[in-house]
Image 1 (cartoon, rainbow, N blue to C red):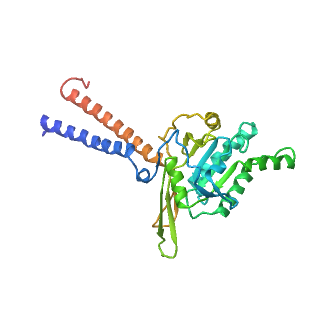
Image 2: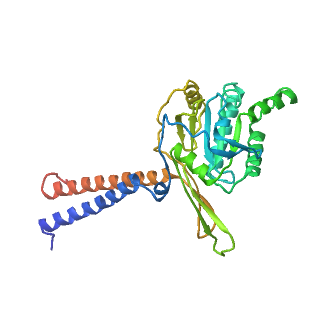
Image 3: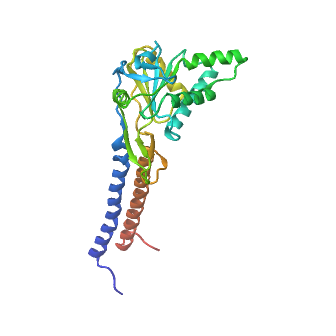
Length: 308
């Protein structure tokens, strides 16, 4: 009977072991390198920097204001989004609403009393009418049902005075975004029929906590907006102090508009990393089991183990 020569069998085993290692290297690059998303967007945490208070914006009522006008001696939750977004930005907004609604029940946090929420649209095409409609939706969901309609109305009025939705020119949006280290990509392209234009926006989701004087105290990254963490960050900001650096390992990317179909899709940066890590683990398990099998076969073939 013809058998493999020891050298041939050894080389065969070596190459069988090497090709999964090559896949492991590729998977590692896939899991830890930059995805196409992070090449055009990201967050640089500029703790301690101060936002430019003289930037002109328009509030949700159509009033021409400066950014400093919404700094009213309370800590600020600054939220870069765009109001027509129905995916990532909507998820972040919903998370903020749920957290503050829970905090309201316990009388822990309230806009207009304990802090201000300032949202600004990163899409310069959006206007005050859209911002006003967005604010109405937010407060329809946020406002609690108190003992009397008068109490409910008073609560809403105070909270609305502490929640601002701004729109502005591209220059103002870019300057404020740069000041908080918010990197996004904005492009305008024609649709397939060339009858209208599409705004392509890639951006991360985050919030920046500002001190009453407008210094950046801390961040939340992604759509995670938990009550205890938010309360702690606001306490630090209220004292004018600089807080912790946020973990960016699970960054959530908002919306991309597919230029070939015109359809929107949510892109989660974490998926890129998770797939890479899972690939590494699966292939690592395969390589280890294969080495164990080859080692056992070599021991049996070389007389190291008895098969009886």
